[in-house]
Structure formats: C-alpha cells, structure tokens
Length: 102
Image (cartoon, rainbow, N blue to C red):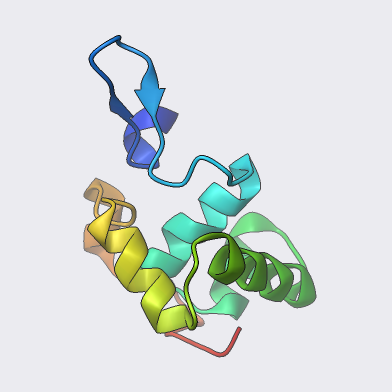
C-alpha cells in the first residue's frame, strides 16, 4: 500500500496531494492510523517500537493538533477524514490494546 493511500491522502484538482491533517509529522500519521483503528497505547508502542511514554506524547500532540478534546473525538475526526478505514483496519485492534488513556 502506498503511503498516500494509507494516510487518507487525496489528490486535489492540480494533482498535488491533500492531507486530512497537514500539520502532522510522518510518525504522528502512523500513530493516528493506529489510534483510528482502535489500537491502545501499549499496542501502538509495540508495533512502532516506541516507548509507552512516547506514544502518550504523540497522542496528546494529535489531540491538540486536530483540535480534539479527547481521544474519542480524535478517533471520530480521523475516521471522518478517512484515516484508519483502509484495508488494514479490517483486522481490528492490535493485540495488547483497546482504546486506552492518552
């Protein structure tokens, strides 16, 4: 899967990609994809080989950057933008985590 498909990037009329959340770093995009699929912080940490604290920091930054007030709202906004709804999301949450505190 191409990164533009994975993170919900769509082309504009000029052919340039349009990101649903253009201010996110590549790593934040990866974390957002997993959060939107329902993965908990521990599962995200394991999948991306990060510490739990680093994932918690990324989730907090995502909440702020997307204008969300909670993890639940972050998930809703991400899914509304098409993040977390790709073919990989059909597998459901990863082992080790349902939604957890950020």
